[in-house]
Length: 111
Image (cartoon, rainbow, N blue to C red; front, side, top):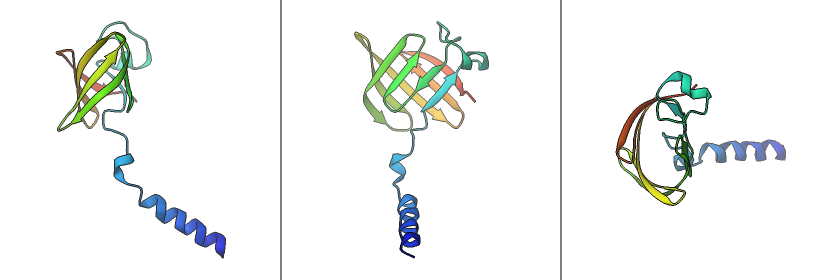
């Protein structure tokens, strides 16, 4: 009986987890062309963008997310090695418009 009560309490507690813990809409693997989803390209057209809550990895390499401002899109100051790069991530469902250092690319989510 006690075990059932504990399990029920855990289930109720899990249902009350705040939505703030949900992943950001931009998190995932994105590419301009579907062929780029499974490779390591060296241009915006041939490389997948891998976005986590704390980092961005693209053809230019690994970048740590510094400052982040959320509005309709997410505005990021990415720390890429020795330089900071302004990045905008505008996720709309399975599409992502990325502005990386003032260059714009439209991407689709990789499966």
